[in-house]
Length: 98
Image (cartoon, rainbow, N blue to C red):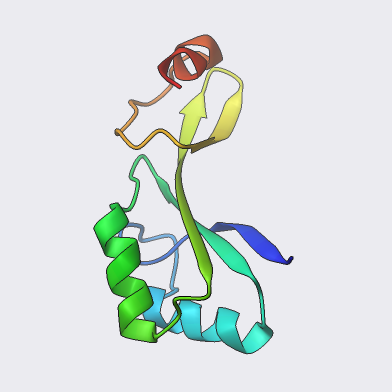
């Protein structure tokens, strides 16, 4: 199983030029099994992921979501916690939320 675990899109970030629909088409061409869409301090809603799958006819593609946050020790990827986290929390505060 091949999964790209850290992809930003231009839906919520100006640091990325990847349109989400174009991204999925490229991933399908590369025959990856899945992707993780990562945004800074923002997590895609489950409905947005489902809409993207419908729009691209990619129901077989695993699309996960997480947020990247700055912490007291650097950037962290936070999986499975879907509320917006504030900036520069200590790692213990981030872990306690999960």
